[in-house]
Image (tube, rainbow, N blue to C red):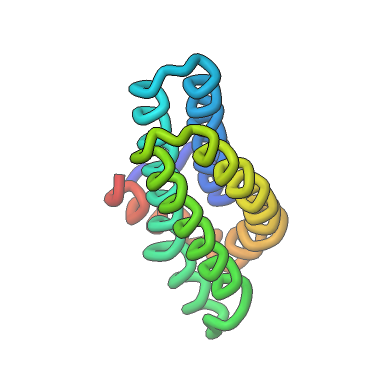
Length: 149
């Protein structure tokens, strides 16, 4: 195993920033009226968020729940929010398929507002709790996360 270059919090926070950058690409492509670029950028944005959720739901959250003995706390709230984000992403895909960039942007604005609030909760609270509870396991968790890439 190799030691991760980033802390647990920094690793997951970096994923948040990456998704944000892909959304900026979508916005720029819409402004430039370039449907092919919009489609490619949205695909990267969508994959980035869904992969991030997968890493949390398959690796991080179960380990946190195991250590805390509870699946009824913050991870339950975050997973419920993940469902809402996935529904919004699906709506955005429908708009994209219809080449309805106005709807794509409208739903995207709603999604990004929600995601920013979601990310703040994770970064300010949940990731810090995970660092405290799982810090000694971070190297092994990191290796598991890498297997999903």
